[in-house]
Length: 130
Image (cartoon, rainbow, N blue to C red; front, top):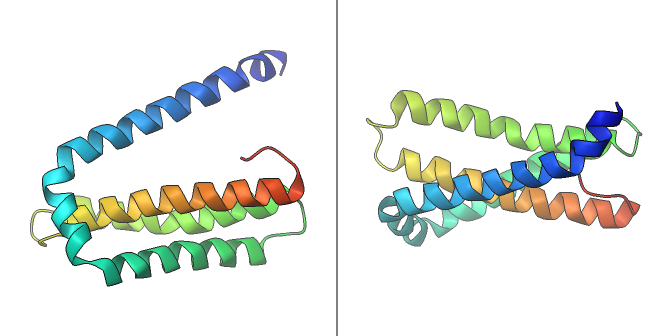
C-alpha cells in the first residue's frame, strides 16, 4: 500500500503521456483517411458526441450513491461502446469503407468528452479527477 501511494502519481503521469503519444501516432498514421472522414460526416460526429454524453449520463444516473462510484460507472458505461466499435473495426475494417476512421473518430470523441465530463464532476465534488 505504501509503495502504491508513493508511485501512484508517477505511474499516472507515465500512463497519460503514453496515451497522448498513442493518440498522436494514430492521428499521424491515419490522417490521410481521418481528415476527409471528419469533413464529410459532421452529422455522424454530432451523433457520436451525443452517444458518448448520453451513455455517460446513463451510467452516472444508474450508479449507486457513492461519490466515487458515479464517475466510475459513468466512464465504464460510456467506454463500453468503444470495445464494440474496436471489435467491429478489427473484424470488418478492411471490407467496410470508412469504418476505421469512424472508430478512430469515436475513440477520440469519447476520450475528449469523457475527460471533460470527469473534470466537471471533479470540480463539482471538489475531488481530483479519476
